[in-house]
Image (cartoon, rainbow, N blue to C red; front, side):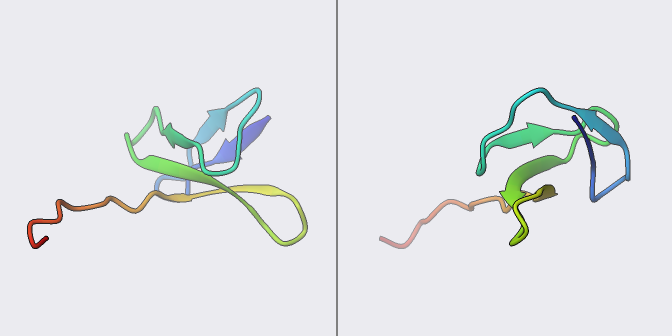
Length: 56
């Protein structure tokens, strides 16, 4: 299955993916999260980076 990187529009070849899985784009290096659309198809979106929580 080929998916498109939302950052650089590069092709990402995957065999099996799980919702929530993090992939890296080979072209631009972006970290992408696998998500499912309402119609059940798979899409990639830019993964949100979690910052350090200094205030406990």
